[in-house]
Image (cartoon, rainbow over all chains, first blue to last red; front, top):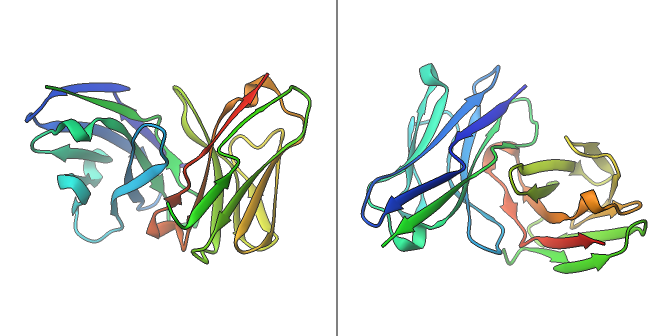
Length: 113
Length: 112
C-alpha cells in the first residue's frame, strides 16, 4: 500500500534562507507524487507534481522538487524563503492503479523576519 | 477554488443529528473526493467517486455515507453526528489521478 512520511511537523527558517521540506514515500509501483500548499483558512493548492517525466520538477512560487527513486524521496526546496511562503505543505502519492491520493500529515513552515 | 463550492462553510450541530455537506463543481470533473483534516493527521480520505452512482469507501468511512446522482454534486452525510466527527471537511475533484486535485474551501463542522 502506498504511504507518505513527511519528516518534521514544523520547520522554521529565516527570510532569505533555503527552504527544505522532506517527503519520503512508499509505493509498490512507480508513483505519481505531488506537493500541495495550504494557507490559513483555505483549501489546498497544487504546487507541483511528478508524473514520470523529468525528475526535477519546477512549481509555482519558485518551489521545486526532485524525485529520487533510490532514496524514495520527493523533497521540496526553495532557494530563498519569503514571508509569504509561511503555510502548511502536504506531500501526496498515488500509484498507477487509479487509487486516490494518500497525503502526508503535513509540515508547517514558519518564516522569520 | 471558483469551480468548487462547498456548503455550508461553517456548521454547528448536536450529537446524534444527521448532517449533510454538499460539494458542487462546475469543472465537469469525473472524479470527486471527500477528505477530513485534523491536526496531526493531515488529510484522510472518507469516500470517493469515479462517476455518477459510482462511489467507494476510503480510510475513515465509518459513520459517513455519500451520494452522487449528478456529475456536479457529491453529498457527504453524517448519519448520526458524534464529537469525533468535529473536523474540517474538504471536497476535491480531478480529471484523473495523475492530474492532481482541485480543492474546495472546506466546511468547518463542530459537533457539540
